[in-house]
Length: 208
Image (cartoon, rainbow, N blue to C red):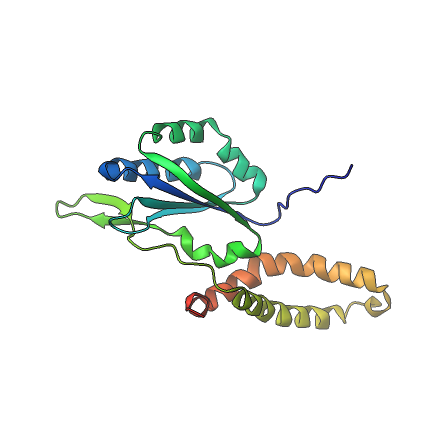
């Protein structure tokens, strides 16, 4: 029997919604930051952050991203994370966990900075959550437009450049497409799409 492998080519973003005992907010703040610090030491870690739904809400959101599924699972199955979760069990409970992969991860990139450091009057610093909700991903049609805006000029330029390869036009169609996709996929993934989504961020986040 054939088994379909999980995709591992793109970063994996995990969003976790938790309920926190309001009477233990200060303790939970340190606990959430400790989880972020622990994840930072694992290979493949790409960033994390956390926010509260509102000043009077008991809903807290944590988001972290890893290079691929194997590095994510190394963190999620680690003894360090198990110890950290157990240490917060008395005041924190998971409500929902969501994984996002591939293209959707690019549109969630702005979620990754969610901790602020304040300078107090005595010169010391205090780290705490930014008081703002997690924004929703842009509509699918905006995602499609963004991908097309990156893909069209990239594909056009690649087609023009490949025309200079001697004999390329005589190759069977399947080999021409194979070479083009092998070249364009990493370019789109690591250069074009991240740049386009950054450039269009205000439009993507604006209400449709």
